[in-house]
Image (tube, rainbow, N blue to C red; front, top):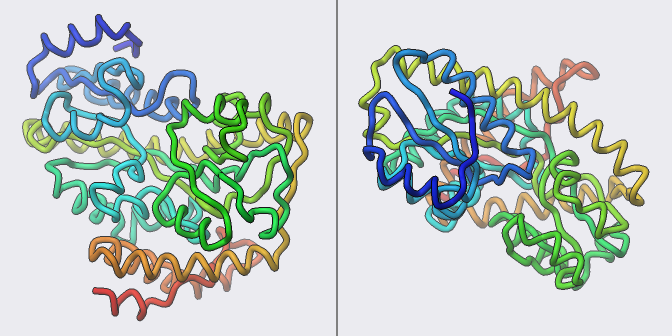
Length: 360
């Protein structure tokens, strides 16, 4: 089925008319408006899923805000008002702090780490365990590598430049880490960032990868870009599926949706890295790009480890997720490091596994 965007009035009328748990016709929305390139991963999944499930299931997709506000997508899927909703898990950290590392980590996982962990080191089971507590199945189908970093109108080259800055930053651990580094976290939706920067309400902001930031127009209201994005060393996206809607599908259709998610996961990495490369070149002409030195990044890593352990010890589910991540890093380290310089990413000097075990 062709993916389409409806006006708010029409969309709500369609939603009201549809059965809450139709077995062969699902309604799916996302947290992203069509103006942000993140929605392309959602569209890719829906298009592929509809091809694979022809005759068994049709997913009708609506852009973010067309059915419910972005912040209400979780509740809409949980209640069965819609069958599926695309998300970034970190938006739901207020419901359970474990959603935060399921979405991103400060200075820890890169995109390959998330893919490895999800596919082979037990990560997929943890997504379903946490989302399952809210009556949902979860299929991770998108991954991006580290996010851009802060965009501002004063250069941020080191930790001194962070002092007292009011910075839009998403994430539980990320906010704690920024405050420890001397900055102040300001929370706001992605759609509000442009005007906040333009009006000087905030001193700087992060949002996503270079291509998504370019689509948000941030080059028009900032002059500097601080890299790398230590606050979110990678991000995961996926689809929440109402448990009853999932259970109503045949095992064959369920398997086809899993295949579509796995295929989209790989596609998303290559797609976003290509698009990020193109956007970096455009940003390089539009703003001044500053990179933190290695000493600064080492300090950030040490503080990030402390914040991760402290946050994990406040929530058993967070401790369980982070412990699984660190055990993966420890397990993979020997082979990854032996493969250098042809290895897949770095082995970070991350949190101690025993410290996380002590939290459980």
